Image (cartoon, rainbow, N blue to C red):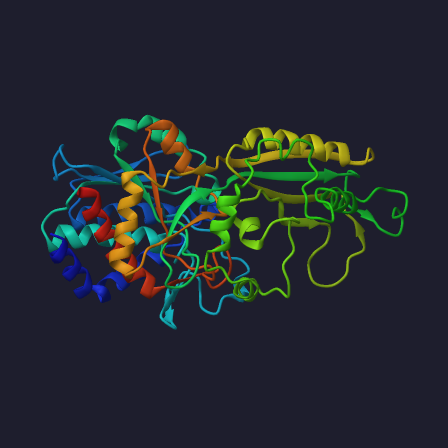
Length: 456
């Protein structure tokens, strides 16, 4: 079966790319109410495609929000292991549109990469698993394992309804491992197994002052400006050493062992490349930790959005009635998102001047995770990477958040295997998102090997 699947995949690269373009052309922005048609189209396209390549049961599950796609093929028999693949078809907003070289939903190939919103996060990486399954089903007539898919449409808005969906369909989702490709390799040509994920608490802070925007000449100087108040609050959330000032914030942070810090020092991480990818002259962060530690294994607090008053072209001299900021905190394992949200709110209220009103809202959250590298499923991924890339993978923590990892662990007790095929410069959540086509095809090959290794 393995030989036939690999041969089928190699012979159908052009078809794989054209089908990926079809999926990427669907505008499935989960945060945009105007994209509801695109959300439904993406779910229906995936369901139809999974059925067409040979999955015997395909359903679109309603949730409290955007629908989830489920598919299964159980033809390997009950004595064979079952793999559950998780992915998401929803994508981030496309703004600022004027910074895209080509339209975000017109997939374009240049420099051996495909450019489109969702190319790497996560449609392209999800499609790797679908094409690997197709290679077995059409090339060999069957899969070496039982295979299921759960594809959600709300990952980019915190997977709000996924936990309830997983609980409601726990029996359908039972598996021996969940495979997830929603991360990246640490460097080009370096296969990477992710063993740690940060959690997330995403907050919104709104400061209001006067009942309406005021003339800044008539009232300025005697009214506390909400924009100023919000900036003062934000400025006090970190000190000049990059340390987050929220009382109790670090209480549950698990210290990095010297062994783990040494492993991080040995990773092929180049700070100069990191600066070039970010477009910055120099790095800045929490003192006492290297850049790789800061971006993967330490908690963070970042302003994601900030607005107040008049922001259109030209001048309008107003004293704004309100100011709003969106702030995310990436959390390391053992930190509890809801507890951190409460500590954050209490601290913001302490910092706010009495002349303004402050509202603090928790928009969405997720737990972090640490994965045991010694599980048979993870070791199967190691062997698959070795066969596909010709070298052993490195092991890293991922700075981002994938809430479903903890959801699956808590709900169906399913260990996760995180096999990312993106690159650090794929412009996730930014204009000109891309996915390296070499990694796309190598990813399909790797997953073909992975399913074979799990079967063994």
